Amino acid sequence: MIDNYDLDLRSMQEARRLAMAAREAQRAFFHASQAEVDRIVEAMAQAAYENAAHLGRLAQQETGYGVALHKKIKNEFAARKVWESIKDVKTVGLVREDRANKILEFAWPVGVIAALTPSTNPTSTVIFKVLIAVKARNGIVIAPHPSAKNSSLEALRIMAQAGEAAGMPSGLISCMTNVSLPGTQELMRHWAVDMILATGGSGMVKAAHSVGKPAIGVGPGNAPVWVDRSADVKKAAWDIVNSKAFDNSVICATEQSVIADRPIAAALRAEMEKNGAYWVNEAEKEALARTLFKPNGAIDARTVGKTPQQLAKLAGIDVPPWARILVADLDKVGPEEPLSREKLTTVLGFYVEDGWHAGCERAIQLIKFGGEGHSMVVHARDEEVIRAFGAEKPVFRLSINTWGTLGAIGATTNLTPSMTLAPGGLGGAVLADNISVQHLLNIKRVAYETTPPPPEATTLAPGVQPLPGQTSTPAPGPAPSSLTDVDIEAIVRRVLQELGRG
Image (cartoon, rainbow, N blue to C red; front, side):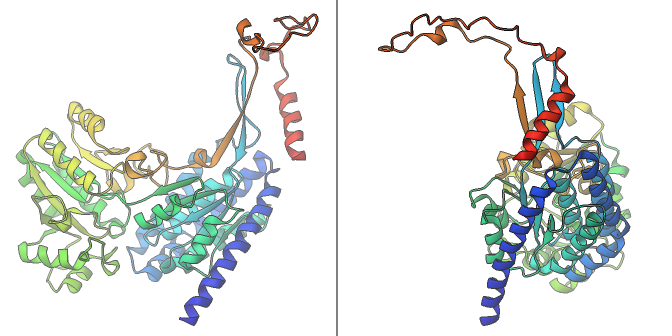
């Protein structure tokens, strides 16, 4: 008890210290030029990319979740593809001028970000959040999941070393080493923190939104995949099995349940089996359900990110050594069917429905049971079906004819590359987008008069006497200049000088 009490105190004090250090560093970094910001962020991205394998091994060893090689791929994605997607984004000074509407837009950082990161994707999420935060000239303090503290800290250390060598102020980015719930709460509530960026379980996300500060919270998904009769069945089967097996299914956009169109269901099953899907029988299904979920519906952490063979050992069943994923036939959705929940491990549900209308209804049931607003996958060549699912499903990203795991994060699609997938108001978030630098950046607008006020607006209030000679029209003066005649660069220099004094 005393040790835990001491940890809480150390954690709270560390949170205060890191938040204030980030605030001071961010004030200095506010004056960095675009070239300086980009040089620093590129250096950190490169360092993370070069250490992707090392960080992948650390994350897998520390948490016991997933596959080290797959975590390397996610680290490389977070470093290389995220950087490529943000490197040309203007985040300093004048970022846009609208001459037609006489509006200038200036970038302004949010301040200091408190970033909560998960145990399932610890190092890749740290890499991603640091890059988008610093690109927008923010400071950031990482509050890692306790079970992924060391690997998260190592990712931060590597990036901080590279960033500071490139000119980044010390303390701009940091990671808590004394991790506890009171410490994380202290970080989120601290006066020096301006925004919370939380990725993880629903409890953590709710806590982030309850602090009373701007928060971007991203919780669980329960992504279904519809395989239409028009689909390329062989490719669909290959995609689904590989996606579900990737990093042992710890990405929240991974397929959780297949909904197969009846005419192709048998062929899809046969092709999935060729790719390493093992169908469990009824007794094995019940054993898996008891093992994966607690009576209250929460997933047992021991089963997260595990291979079929590891799950079989925990459940007391036998599965073949070639099994890459386990598949259970299901016909219900809800608490009475535990395997219809999100399963952050190598277990997949399998439904059969006749026609896309019935498939649509089943998909909505699954999404509403967990993961509203998050993600879905569709395999089809019929464009009408694709567009119908896009229009009707209560999710904000649909990956078409690709892996759910990599499609939703923007690795195999042209969605914004991100490790934080916001589910919008349906999922309790303020945004419905793949989070990136633009969400951690404020835009200041300078607007010139384009329409004079109406004459009635100058009417005196009842009881107010006009001054001698007062008129309802402005006194004549020099004609207002058009924005097209203004030296924009001169305006920028003057504004930046004024900002520098602040």
